Image (cartoon, rainbow, N blue to C red; front, side):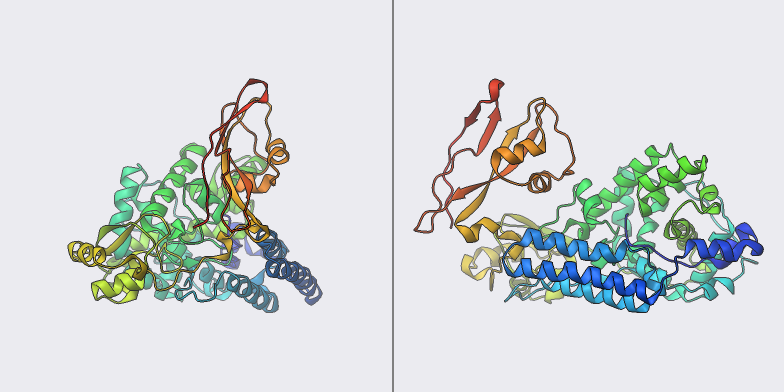
Length: 511
């Protein structure tokens, strides 16, 4: 899923695959070495980007700040230095993430977003010695599976790690939590015609935690990074993050896996590898190697170390999870989460909902992990509430004055258009592209950036336009002295032959 490198050290696995004589050379090539000077240079570069971003943020130029913050993170992630092997750079990166995240917290925000570490990052802590001292002798494989795969030595080693090594506690946590979402995942995977065994990817990705957040900003049970999440319809705003929505993210994961399976001509191991590193990396590896076979790519070191280990980890977890008692696990799974659905007509504080139901706030929050700020969005929203409480809640809610539905409305900075501060308000128009239109041409025509148009339409800034394609374009409307926005024409703009447009006027005023 395009996340930060999972640097699982595989000295013993490489020895099995290549022989001990070539082990030192192979290992040196797979784990880049770094010096203190290298790390210092990376920190200096990243900090420069961060300071510039902080200045832009203070001046209200939020989009420029966001881009600089991203550049600061990229300076570390793309440095080629293994964070697990460089404690100073690892500590700096964690601190940098924390500082950047604090800019999202708003004054008066009673429910800041709470995230948990992603287990996929935890697996990066596996040490060479933990695998080197575990041998595959005596490991037996039980059961039948929905996908075809070969149990290569790395799979046996990771099975031992999860059965007898430090990974056992992580395995037990995941097996327990899986009960909350397993039925849901199986139902959705069945509907999407994806092998049910693949639900266990969630065990390795997040131990079934909707609020799991990796170092590379991959989030949710299925660890979608922002770009892939948008690609599969997972909305991400200041109020909600559908990557943490159990149902929506699970369906997106199933569809992504299905697409990868088709892309790699029915090979599930290659699809799993691509789920981790992205299909382009696997495509490139196949092109360089000449073999469309995961184990061949793994043996030749054609994939990132993270991905070479990811597939064996998934297979080992799959085998253990389907045969828990045979491998010595006596874990009682959590009960499935059950709930009623209630339509909330306007923004409402989850603490208000909890009070109306006489339930703990955390119980409501757990049912709605996609809500980032402990409140529903300003528009109508379908909220999950404890099973059996719908009628009582609807009565209590209908009797609650609207002004009491939120204890304090906090408008996230990201939702305030930059033009607002200079007397302008951003409006959105719809444009129907003609042959030859480009994003660059639209940006010049309407006075906005290519990046703004691309972001609004969830497309690449380098993307092309199709004839007749509807494109949403942000434009600015001048505010009057009284603070109310003047009438704005061009809510809908349709291109006609000769470049003429039709305007449908409407009124937009600040409330």
